[in-house]
Length: 518
Image (cartoon, rainbow, N blue to C red; front, side, top):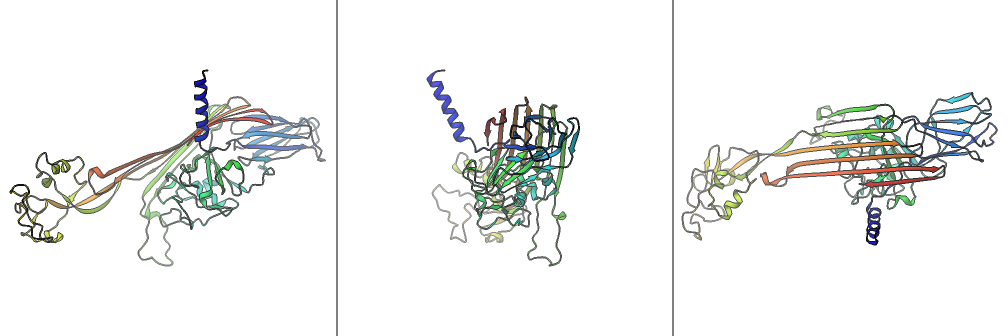
């Protein structure tokens, strides 16, 4: 490789490191514990097998001379632990639940007996956090599905974690009410839901403003580069496996965020196909009404009308080896419009411009005509003019304000006498120059969120994972008077991608290779 190519390669690597978003390890969880006998003495040489019951992936560890075993790089999932040692009964722990993204402690005590005898603990076994000093809580997918969050915004639930504060206030449209002193976009709006461009959950930790919170999805920092404490991707409820909230984080890996650390892990497939579908119809008539204190003045009413629907499916591509998960969510907002009225020039007036003139160029410009216009009944008195003197009503068409001068260019209109009598040029005619139009301002919106994930157990020591969140949105509305050339179309794509390869060399040596884009 030439010196130039080496320099180019090193420069690319430097730029990748410099401009990549802040990342956290997605498979940071581990289990460590001591195998003991009934008297508390350590058991060396015990075989400990950890099995992911979703994918049947197995990892094996042997307790050392101090009775210690360890498993690293664990994704959030239900596990089964089997312990075998000569002179002791085989012990099986079903439904072992771990705390994601951190070390877990689980000591194992064996009973004296025949090797062929088995002791099975079928209840849920919770691990302990004895390795860190963090104050944290984990919101599981089951809790997410059963606890209410307006707009299906899972980040509203972070207020429930230990050490977090927030008032959970909501406005009349259902959207969150920002906490005092909030800077930036704040929480989700009444109809924005998970599609808000920047979503800042209104929850505080360790005396910090919410702008100091850090948010990551599958190890990728999705915190906005403009507003701290907001995420550019708000994941769908059905795509989230867990949300871990650390409220007293002090690790250097959290970089500029000194508040809470919100770590979202997306769902992955398993050996069994599973899926879900939901449909939500938001209508003013379906909202509750509190009658005890009567109606306010004026009556506040949520006029939002939209449907929110989506679903997900996951399962095996190759059992015990390759698994997939896919989720989609959308908000269906029917095309609507705001009705108003206004005075605009008519097509007949535009046609009076001399061909080739500057006026003709502008009046014939594509999109100059009024949109969706119906002519309203109006008279000269509506605009302060006098019928037959400086204005003429053309029924069903509008008002005539005069006609072009027939005198040479540069000649002043002799009929002009002042601001209240602007003149009629060559005289009144039967051509309507202006009309009062009823205008419907069009509003069309399209919002989708796609989430995909692929996991592969290449060997018992190698795991590959790919995840993507892709959120395209577009909106069309008017940006100015109701003319065609003022139609404003905005489209955007918020996205996050990650690819991870974990290789375990030994119980104490793990390598993670990762690339991210957000």
